[in-house]
Every structure is written in C-alpha cells, then in structure tokens.
Amino acid sequence: NSQSNQFCEAGIGYGEVGCGLSSSTKLLIKGGTVVNAHHQEVADVYVEDGIIVAVKPDLKVTDDVKVIDATGKFVMPGGIDPHTHLAMEFMGTETIDDFFSGQAAALAGGTTMHIDFVIPVNGSLIAGLESYEEKAKKSCMDYGFHMAITKFDDSVSRDMEIMVKEKGINSFKFFLAYKGSLMVNDELLLEGLKQCKSLGALAMVHAENGDAVFEGQKRMIQLGITGPEGHALSRPPLLEGEATARAIRLAGFVNTPLYVVHVMSIDAMEEIAKARKSGQRVVGEPVVSGLVLDDSGLWDSDFATASKFVMSPPIRAAGHNKVLQGALSNGVLQLVGTDHCVFNSTQKAFGIDDFRKIPNGVNGIEERMHLVWDTMVESGQISVNDFVRVTSTECARIFNIYPRKGAIIAGSDADIIILNPNSSFEINAQSHHSRTDTNVYEGRRGKGKVEVTIAGGRVVWENNELKVVPGSGKYIEMPPFNYLFSGIDKADASYLSSLNAPVKRSKSTT
Ligand code: URP
Ligand code: ZN
Ligand code: ZN
Ligand code: ZN
Image (cartoon, rainbow, N blue to C red; front, top):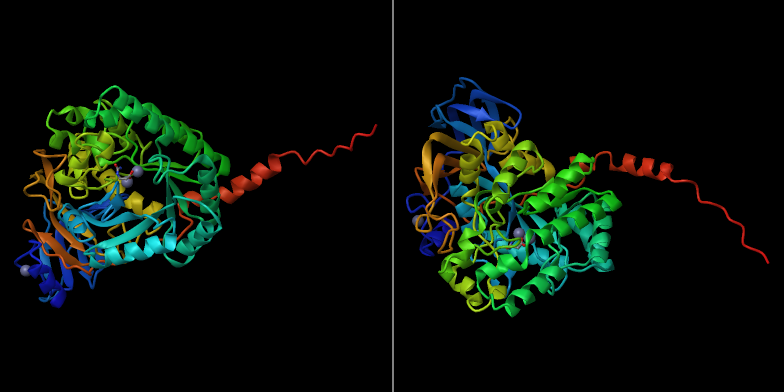
C-alpha cells in the first residue's frame, strides 16, 4: 500500500522484508502461559480482527489462521507506557523521536500503547491538542493523551471541560518545576486541582520546587560548576520531597486523587507512602531510569556521556534506586513509566558550557519492559503477575481503559507480547530503534526477551524484525471518573456534615 511504500522509500530502515500490513487477521497463540494481573494459566489465545476472541486450552482453528507457538513462554498484555514525550518542543529544541520512531522503538520492546503529554500552544489547550493530533497521524500503535496545564483562567477552565467531555483526555499535568516556562504556582495548582476534581480528571504533578531549583542553579554557576553534574547538584532530593509533599497536601485539601509522575528519590517516595498510609489517594509512578540507574554517569569526564543522563528530576545517587524498587514491590508505587524524552548528542551539546542548557530527558520506551523484567522479576522482587500489573494493567485501570487494554481476556484489544524467560536481551545504541545516537542503558544485558509483539492483532515484531505501518495506530479516548474517584463524593459529604453549623453572632452594640 502507498503508506508503507512511502515509509520504505523514506529509508527509515525497519522491516524491509514486510512493510505492508500483515495479511492474516486471524491469529492463534498456542501453548503459552497466559499471564494477567489477576491470574495465570496455560492456554491458547485466539485473535480475530484485532480483538481477543477466546482464551482457552487446546483451541482448534482452520488453516487460514496464523499459528504462533508460545510453549514455555509467557503470553502477556502489551506494555502501556504512561509517560512519554514524542515530538515535544522543549528547551529550544524538539525531541528526536516522533510518534513513528518512538512507537516503533516501543513495539520492538513489547510496549503497545503509550500516553503522551500534550503541551498547550501559548497556553491554548485546543491549539495544543490540534498540534498533537497532527504529530500523531503517523502513529503505528495505539496512544492516548494527557494534557499539561501551564496557566489558568476561565478559558483554560472551559477548555479542560471540552478535553474531558469531548476529546477523550482524563488527566492533566502540572509542572511545579521549569520556572519561566512550564511551571505553575500554588494558586494555579489549586485552581487546577479543583477543576480536575469537578471533571473527574486525574491531576498529575511534576514535583520539584522550581523556585528553589532556580536558586540552586545560580549557586552552582557561582561555584563554577557548569558541567552535567551541576544539574543534579542544583536540584537535590530535598526539593523533590518538598514539592511532592506540597502537591499531596493540596490535593488532600481539595480531596481529589493525585498522580505523582517520575518519582526519583526516597524523599518523594516517603511522602507518597505516608499519604497512602493515611488513606489519601495518591499514585506514584517511578520511571525505569530512576529504578535501575544511579547518578555516577553524570560525573563522567566525557560530556557526551555525562549529558545523556540529564533529566528532571535528576537520576539520584546509588541507593535511591534500590529503595524505589522496594516501593514498587510493596505497592507504595504502582506503575512504571519511562519519561521517554530523547535528544541526540548534538542537541545535548547545546549545554556544553552550561548544564542549564542541556535539554532534559532520557530514553526508555524500548527498554522498559526488559529492564523491569530483569530488575524486578529475575531478582525475585515481584511476581510475573505483578510484572503485568506494573507495566500494563494498573495503567489501564488508572486511565480508565481496562479491560479493553491491560488484559488478555475475550473482548480485549489484541495487544499481546510473548516473552521468553530463557532468552536474553542486550541494549546498545547501534541496535536500538530510537532515532537517538546514545542510550543511557548502553551495554546492559539481562534475562528475558520479548520475542513477539502483537499490536491491534498484527504481528509487528518477530524474529528481531519490525513490521510497522505509519497511520495504523489508533487514538484511545479515556473516560473520566476512574476508580480513584469512587467514594470521593461520600467523603466530601461527611466532611461537610462534620463541620459545625455556622456560628451566629449578634452585631456588637455600643
Ligand atoms: O527531563 C525530563 N523529565 N524531561 C521531560 C519533561 C518532564 O519533566 O517530564
Ligand atoms: Zn520496505
Ligand atoms: Zn516532568
Ligand atoms: Zn515527562
């Protein structure tokens, strides 16, 4: 078809053997261990026209069905990455993975859906959405949108309602960092939290104190520390802990659920643990870089190496990662994202003389599933069922698209991976599918390999080959009022009834 030809001629370089749509719309995945977050069993999975039709042992099919043998392997829901930035304009440049290359990389690593952050254009949500709808036309897998809120007034408030009621967006992100660009103050955050609550939309926060970060940056420059390590030194865990605590308390004050993105430090995690223990509805999202890396790379004497690790909040000193892994295994943190936001070494070099100009962000969309498997399952910290929960199911539940996504049951979308626990993976910038020329996980090897990825019923990754078609991904609308909102109204009512009736006082007379 012409779209696939266009793709081939563009020389993007994937899937030279089969750029077209897979001819078979019927698939049988035979003999694998089918793993859901709630259950696992040895069964066959039968797929027709992009939908899972049956999950049962020993299914019999006709000759026109493509059969994939999964004996001895795990058959799991495709990963859902709750946090990506494809084709985002940021810090004077644009992330180098767009909706095609980033998604192709995702599919090669077993992720079949992602939720990207729409950035408003001059504060306009409508213009922001239009711009992202355009960017996403080349999608080769399913995607949804969160939306950032960077200012607040009546028109933003109205547009938030349009986004939720008409456009399929059920979450809004507030940046407490990036002073002078994306940052919002407490007044705006409160307005946003109130509007999120009334719409049944989930409020998300990037929790770092942006004013203090600005101060920390000046301090580093005065000390003559201009290299990538200055980035981490200027925004210590203290500032992440402060902003996390503040956002949690303000969400508690409004009584609306809160989702803390990219939890990078023990400090932030402990605030989430404390709030959850008290019954507050707070979700914590660690990202792969925070779970598996430490800050040592930032001190590399080679700028290109050190700068690739620059992201916000920063990758922390060794020790934070292990504690975050523990928090993921005991449920204080619930799902794993990537914050995939890649800039190549030329873009990173914008900050060669000043860490403040290094575009912030690291890769991970392709590596997430393998690294979570190796770090968490192979080490015995979580079960295979929990792997499915933290990489897919919980994201689908939170963003209210379960069980269409995040499950292998009859009626769900056929987004499926086959993982061979006895095979192994190796990561490097030469073989990865992202457009960037570096990889923060360079040289890493581990156990477990995604051998097959099926997206929307099509086999898109098999035998280490991608067969992806721009335009084949669908926009997934996400409805408001997820499970975190259930009972919020009752809690509000009991709060109101707990207040004393207004005290009547007579006007003082002389
Ligand atoms: O460094 C990062 N995280 N870049 C992406 C923007 C954000 O803060 O999520
Ligand atoms: Zn081709
Ligand atoms: Zn952020
Ligand atoms: Zn991000």
